[in-house]
Length: 298
Image (cartoon, rainbow, N blue to C red; front, top):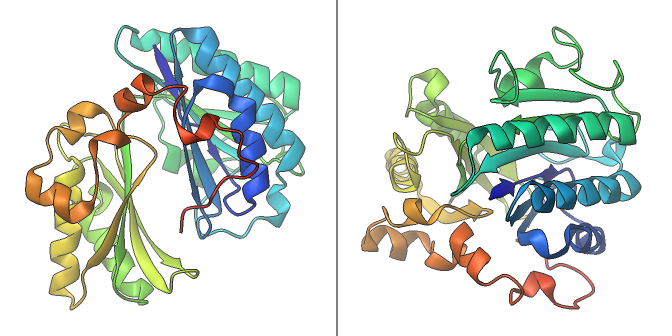
């Protein structure tokens, strides 16, 4: 079984988000939208290559029709309207299946949508990272497929195959973005922090708060609890605190099993936020209802 977690540079128009969700069909397990990031994360999964790949192609067509990157002003970094398309092999799949899916989607998107494609992670022979793609795209690095220049409305797409990761945000009880950035530097691996942690300090205008936004790419080394407790400790040392913990999308059940009771109670992260729980509940979740528009996350 393959999971695909496309990230779209649209997080504010509920009716656009609804249309994109409907395009995914019954492979859709979760939508997480953020108005300040101006970004939405779609979690797709299904038994076999055709399910996940078919859903993300339908989503890509809908994004091409409805999203215009030239109007985007969110705080999250991006290179495209359909910004990243990661494929992940779940139980019963081999990692090469995810690589094959990434390459097939990249070739399709370049030909069908005329959008430049950059491969990263296991789909890139050099194993380059997403931050490297964002830094080098169209300057030090040409696209791997598609046109040599960004699409006028859609920009480019970064496509990968990778292991499971978790995205989690810690909202701080302060408006001081310098504090969030200092904590992000302290926890991210590249600056000597926790192994497998990528972090940014961001300002949330709609909430008058700041956030430490993290991707945990080596869960065996640094899981949700260690990352969030470290942010909390650093925040308290700076005279503030973590006001809210937000899981972006879904996490593997094995990762939530590592959380102790005190952390669960503090963070509010529960068992219904796992990939496995949503697969079991497929067809009964709110995203498959007949509602007209998605409700945006605060």
